Length: 86
Image (cartoon, rainbow, N blue to C red; front, side, top):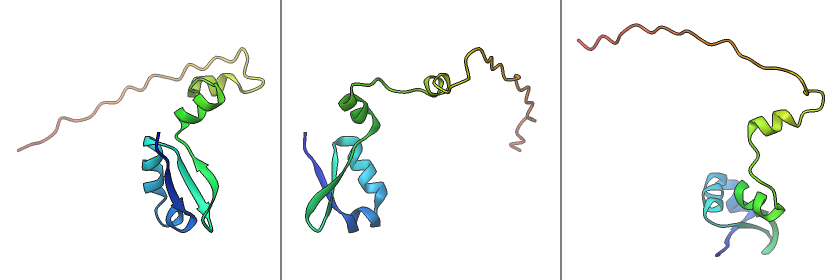
């Protein structure tokens, strides 16, 4: 696995590029030429920590005091007019 390196200045100028690079491999962010931070995509982070991917449902279940709460949202009945293509 190759590492991408960004200086702090490069990272600040183009965070999106660093995030795209982190999808492929970890990104090292340097301050004055020395590594200071590592940017990982969340899958790599979970793998490193030995955790499974966390879903929204898992997060909601982890909230203290949420035991026994039922959440049944009302079904939306949305009607849209047909498109006028003429």
